[in-house]
Length: 458
Image (cartoon, rainbow, N blue to C red; front, side):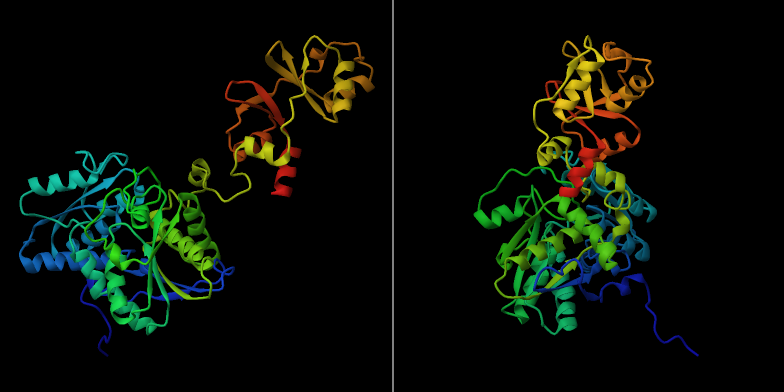
């Protein structure tokens, strides 16, 4: 019996990715939201579509010759697509990545045998250290090389006119109202949008951009803002790529890092969709757009890449906590918690030359169980009801004894901008926590009771 279905190589497998409906994460909007799982391409992202087309066109034009070297500045995914094509067809690769890209992306490219150059993220595009500038310089100085140049090579956009757009229309029969995706190079939204509008004149094309990018603000106002840093990979820009055709876009939605990362993890835990951060961003954008509609619509969203590129970041609990991205009641500062619980009154305290009776009077009058003890302006310890009660009952101490005899010093001072997650961990270790302001003045004591009251009312 002969084999009936197979492909000649892995490049032939690119495309025909499935579309699925979101259920749980989009349950609170009336519109139906569908997602196209581009991470199910063989290399794990939508960028394989453009890599294939860019290289095939370069070969056809004679720009890339046998045994040549492909050079590209990439956030990682285009590089994987190019490296995969190069592996099959015998080309070499050099990729330049900004240093905010995940180590998984860098290791993936090196696994293909590519050379990888890492450059600073927070430099201007025209800076000679930027990944745009470095990639261009490497291409100019490497013999028999081809610069893929996904930002300005219009074969990027054309790949989606020929591939992504027709595939979506064939899968859906045009039975949707809005097409949405994140915007970076502009190739996906411009190419797919152009094709869809040619066969579906009423379809709305909506881009998703990240706070800090210059793209959506320019589309909305016509003004060029100063870009500022963001952590999300794959969408947003500090340049205007030639592949981005603003005339195709009907609207933009802005999102931020935290909500993108939180949604990315929700897609996995609630929908079983193992996608990257730009996918979470696109879904947040789709839900926000759906909330703005007067009538329910069918919304189709591109999920560009796989979550396996972000195991050290978005899917790493410690990374999420350290960045302040964790969607948890502990993901606020202790200052915010104190305001939330109303614990912002003046700190009740005593001096270390007072006696035990004075401490009891203060605690009873103020309805507190612990009181900080100072020597002048310096915190030297604290006393608690539980520490005082036993020696008083057994007669080893009396009310006139100095407070130093029962004072505890197992405390730690934290700044008011410390995350509650850190406070919780320290309390678990048995420490008593005092909070200082920016001038190092002690302003509060934090107890487990404070955490419980906050979480109960959060």
